[in-house]
Structure formats: structure tokens, C-alpha cells
Length: 102
Image (tube, rainbow, N blue to C red):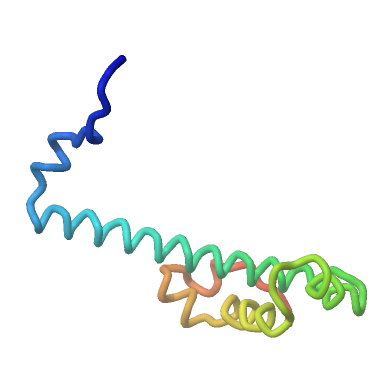
């Protein structure tokens, strides 16, 4: 039977300097934030498309019964997705985004 040992650290983990750690964390942070914003925009756009496509009343019924958030959150997500300032901030030109009517 082998004896328990501490988790092995790789040489690259130990050898990083503070600036190298900071650069890695900053890059991961930026990527994660961008992915989060893209995800929020995607959900908002999908909600807009569903609202347009579903029969009257079905959209709110879907939110109330099938989604993990309430109608005020859905409204906020759609408002974010429609905002050209946010699209510009994440590197999209408003004309590159799908256009959905309110």
C-alpha cells in the first residue's frame, strides 16, 4: 500500500511570478466576463424571438411555468439584448446583431 502524499504541484505553477499570475488571472477574468455577457445577450435575443413567435399569452405562461426566472428578469434580459450600447461594448456592431421587433 502506498502512503498518502500531498497533491503534486507542477513546476510551472510554482515557477510563476506575481506578474505572470496576474496576467493569467486577468486574461481568464476578461474571457469569463465576455462569455457571460455573450450568454446574457443570447438569452435576451432568444426571449425576444420566442415572444414574437408564440401565440398571445403563451410567452408569459412559458416564463411562469417553464423558465428559472420571472417575467421581470425576462424583461430585463430582453432590454439588455436590444441595447446597442451593450452590443458595441462587447464588440458587435448593432447591424451585426439579429434584429427582433419588440
